[in-house]
Image (tube, rainbow, N blue to C red; front, side):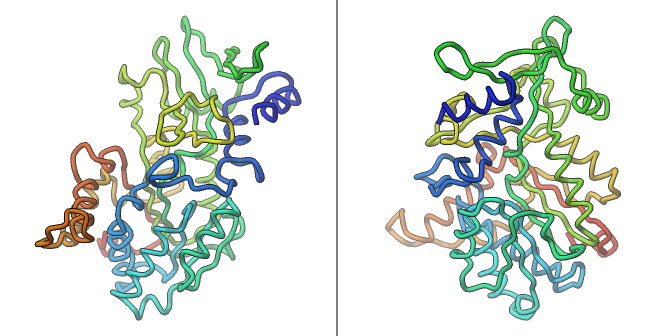
Length: 363
């Protein structure tokens, strides 16, 4: 595996950017981490997502989505981007069918998933539902109208990495040493795209600060805007505002590798582990505003879930067995809303493009 990266570095002239490295080890169509036929999420994987904590996560969003369609706030179409194993989609559709069979019967469901392995998993998970699975947003049939949902999509996008040393901006490249180990190499920043991003986002790096540049995220948002006509766009992810990026604890950036639930240097275990970064919330909001999207909701995930009614899923438990189904569900709900639980790191954004939601005030 390491030799594949080294060969690629040699082919590119001796050094590659972090985005090139991430694109190679995460998204290579055969060797890439997300393309491999291996479990990545859950106890036997490398990380957890909110939908794997409890099926209540999917049920709660089903309630939100079904009400939007029932009220004719949005077209009866649902599209998930980067759904991974398909667990959220399956559990959400199961609940939607149960609580609103009439809207469910008229529902058009699309899932966009780059990984062929995960596309197969999604088909298997949602085998009792009629879904259309496509490999990229470019394959959407015409201009899309409806609900768009993503959970932990942008945090896995390739990023560029820069660093401020002695008031000079450098881009961080990856090369290899005499022992064929991957190492970093700083080179003076010359990328016009990165410089333009810093000006656009009004970013001033502190001395010694390392910073990830989300050019791919913005490019994908461009595609999303071009492919949609009228939509409610739900984005769930973890990240920081520009102000939060200035906190001393974040001066080394946010890029991390996760291998069997252990945090790793991102240059370790190429092709074998997840690599993630916190997304830039201010950049997300600014680009959405430039498109003319209206911001309907912007809340921390635990606050969003409480407002949406997650406590209604708590059940009285008189079982002696602490590992019974009711006890497990109640514990999962608590973990989703506890101040230091998984939701405290996530944010939920709801944007509308050309829909009637802001007029009807339905979110």
